[in-house]
Amino acid sequence: MSENLSREDRLSIEGRYYEAIKNWSKAVEVYHTLWNFAPDNLDYGLRLAQAQTSGTLNKDAMATLELLRNLPAPASKDPRIDLAEIVAVHGQSEFKRELAAALRATEKGQKLGARLLVARAEMGQARAYYDLGDVQQFQKAAETSRQIYAEAGDLGGEARALHDLGTVLYEHGDLAGAQKNQQEALDTCRKIGNQRCVSDALNSIGIAFKDQMDFTNARQAYEQSVAIRRETGDRIGEAVSLNNIAVLLYQQGKFAAARKLYEQSLAITQEIGEKRGIARALTKFGDCVSRAGPARGVQQVAGTIHRYPPRDWR
Image (cartoon, rainbow, N blue to C red; front, side, top):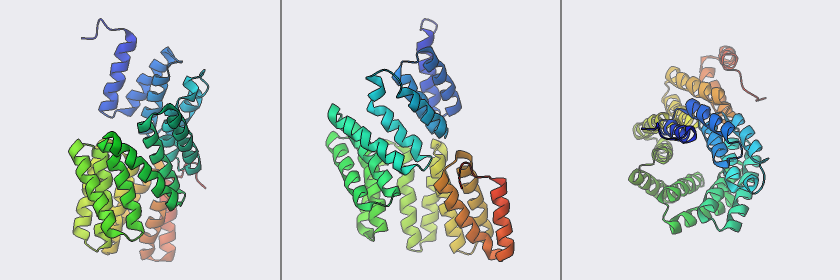
């Protein structure tokens, strides 16, 4: 039915299609073609960066965004460039740069009166503050984001904010408050069909069950989470969920099974260059293989590092 459409329109539709089925390599290819066709089109450049980030090509996405900043104004000053950078640099564990991008996006959004854009930027701030260890600023930014989403009737955004707030409440001992937030987030995510949001809430609920020594329900929640994360192409989340299942197995004395999952988690984080995940998986893997004895354990960890050499990590 597309024979009467222009080549540009056909490619734009094709790119959306590949995004919908999560074929990120094809989406990147199509958006590269479109952007080369119209290099001054900000939307094409942003879609290219988004596809690159979703396909775990974070460095490529950052390079694309740098080119967008060199466009003539006002395109170069568009806060959506900063929002895209938040996601791209998070995948590289560059949290200070992530925070700087979020602060820029917040300031620009406020000047434009774009409330939902500000909500996204505030949530970007919150995650960066959390990763940098500033819990007070995290809570302030996350609550600001939640309020804006609630006032706008954006249930998906509100659910994400509730999830992040619940995570921090749990880590600071407010178990009742954390459980309330996570359950509200899960119910809302299911209501609107946001699968990635569902997987995040399930993972947090699994952590709560694990800490209560309820390993059966914890594993069930984790396995549901990892299945959804695979389906949605959330590679970082998949690695986290695999790592969490491995923790359960380790605590139950099932060291061989735990080791296999740690290796899978490590392989994913090495593949996408997610530094924090690499450190997490190597640490846990080392704990696991050390059960075989100090010398043998060190040799096994060294062998694993050799098979999955870290990217840009020292």
